[in-house]
Image 1 (cartoon, rainbow, N blue to C red):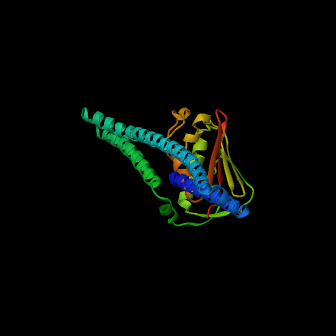
Image 2 (tube, rainbow, N blue to C red; image 1 turned 45 degrees about the horizontal axis):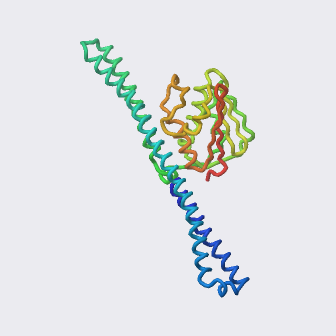
Image 3 (cartoon, rainbow, N blue to C red; image 1 turned 180 degrees about the horizontal axis):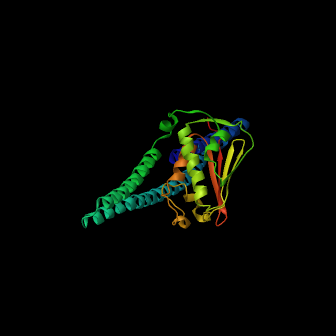
Length: 283
């Protein structure tokens, strides 16, 4: 948890500050044994005062950083709830509308069947969305308990290849231990996004050692939105005309980071996006 990491970091800093000041005063006393006699009670007062000032400074920085983190978390949760409500509302509204239209008058069996198929399709959208949300709520330990096996990464990527994908591996030696279904979901979402937003242009996949890069020539992502695209349900403002619910990328990143992979993304608007995944620390 980021909040715990901040708390631990500043706890270590505080202990370190006190330890350094204590060592410095100890060395002064050892090197200048006459100091306690010269300054008397003023020496421990100075020791306490310096420590208090330094700890106060550390505490203020800790408070500012925690406040910023809490505000960021609040805004992220607020955005998540808003986007989730919107994504769930769309299929539910479609189902309600389809039911109301079907009940307005008597219809033929084929018309009822067509209506039910549309309702079933929207219901399936909700089910898939809820499954993804449930997976995102899983803790790291739950995910890591799933069955893993040794995977040759270059071989594994072959299943995603199609005519618009150019795959360039340097070798077929890099292996990692992951759950294959989860890895397929993670890479499939990222590669699927690259294809979707590239139109009929090529998508390049490069594997160099432990580093996998997926680069498209699509619409790109506005720079001011790059730091938000990993949030569940968040979709860049230039993707509204494309199908999707904004949860695939966050799901992929969640899976990969749980296993220890490092994920970063860079993009230039109207030129394309590159996702870089480093599997070096995957256990």
